[in-house]
Length: 192
Image (cartoon, rainbow, N blue to C red):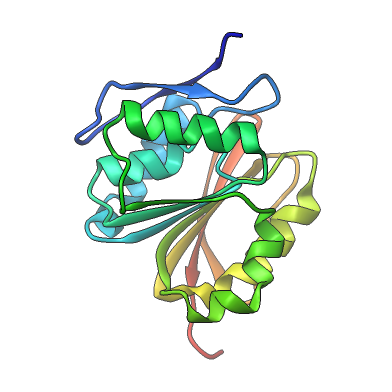
């Protein structure tokens, strides 16, 4: 069985390492999208708690760890994808206590009462399947209270499905479009 290619780590300690993808159904984050995403997030990453929601290959969280995030939590419902994330972490030499893998459906995991006791994330990437905009909205609605004040959330979504300007505790601050893919950047806002 051959694995799909999920691109490479762009910068940091694992720079140049090629990542495997869980299969044909996974949309890898292209290098151009990843470069833009992490250029914008760079100042927020050092020492950050990073959340990779709908993790797929784990490329976003692995890039964050490579660039100096203190920890990354990878949430993915597919067991095969969890195995690929684990292998990618080993390949990038970024496994260990800084990397936490959660095999659960992302929106259900966000809604769990146990999340109230978790530390808050500084940066989160939300990347649900493009054909499920309902999951994007549910995840954005649920994640706001779990992000540190002033923290950032990035939604990766299909360009033809606009992300809301405000949702829950999040307000959009910018958007970057790459053909079929758009990144919408949010900040956690305080009591409005």
